[in-house]
Length: 335
Image: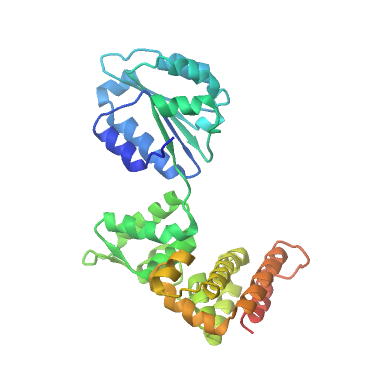
């Protein structure tokens, strides 16, 4: 079965090329919500919605109830829309096969199956793919977050600098709904005479320090800037709840893992290194600098250290407070 993109589904919906059933599933709920909201808000007009829009919840209904609703004919409208939210809680999906043999063209039956997928080996999945729309919304990988942020900002007619992009990616992770919420807040609060989202704007409106964060710590470690490293570690120690060790360990693990890949990459052109490490070519120069301070053997040692202190931060083999563990870890990493 060919993978269907969000853009393809939305284009067909906007062109009123409707299907009788939509299975929107996957780990990333953002696109599932966008598509189901579009169907709910645009297929029917306000008068038609009164009799022909039904919203159900998977915790409250079974498949038989959903199918019975789907078999109804619309009232004073060419379509009826049935949206099943939290559809991951419905267990008897195999029953849907009977409905799919003769689905009503006047019904748009939409399943919002979040935080997972139905086993694609099931017959009902291939039947939905043949009769309707099977859309899978996958979570972003860490390396995809920064390009996604840039593209979203670009669609709003704005720009965002590299540091601001990295700060947001580090602070917000891969949760697209959270990322969009914070970006929209920044867009609303930016100066009217500016079309740029900056780290200063982020610090003011989101509360991420532009000087003391894991992005700056990573840069300082890569440049072996001991003075800056110590300032950031001291700042983290003052507010350990806002700067958890587990997040710092994750960032530094990615750094040394990428550095190890860099050392074992024979073709060290910027384009090849960027592709191998899954980073923006803008950052390749930083890895070239870091490689002069951390050879392949030191990178392997540091990866082992990070695993050790990750365990300690979870109470395995240590009861020291996080800020003390961080001091020890950073000292060992850079010396």
